[in-house]
Amino acid sequence: MLIRPFADADEDAVVALWRAAGLVRPWNDPHRDIDRKKRVQRDLFLVAEDAGALVGTAMAGYDGHRGWVYYVAVAPDRQGTGIGRLLMAEVEARLLALGCPKTNVLVRSGNEAVTAFYERLGYTADAAVGLGKRLIPDD
Image (cartoon, rainbow, N blue to C red; front, side, top):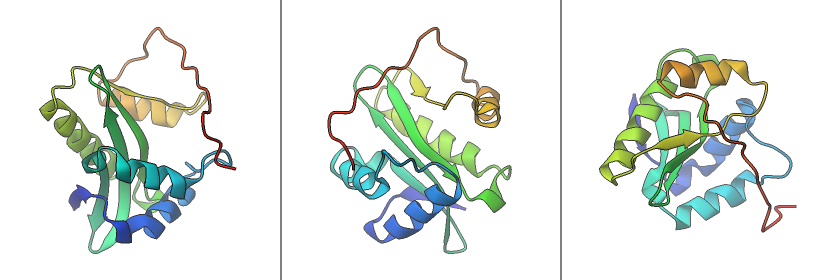
């Protein structure tokens, strides 16, 4: 298993993985999200590769206050094999190296399996409500 930074040639495989894992939503164009990430902290966009196949992703950012992790995905047939744990460990190590004191993840309401995954990694629910405002529509 190789955890490495995203390369431009990975884009189609990454989007296919995100679709297979159920991460893509109509209001987010995954290609635009990738293009945006390539311009900001590109080294925090990671992929997991096994025997030449892209099997996982994690996208992170650090704003000087805390880190955020998005697009954590593992190929459906490889879920539960430790790939997500490896990706998160690498993301956390990279954020820590930047001096990041706290990392957050957002999990969609009702996604108990993913919430349980993060709880096993030591994440706990914050007493906060996530609010969002779209500045640039993807449609």
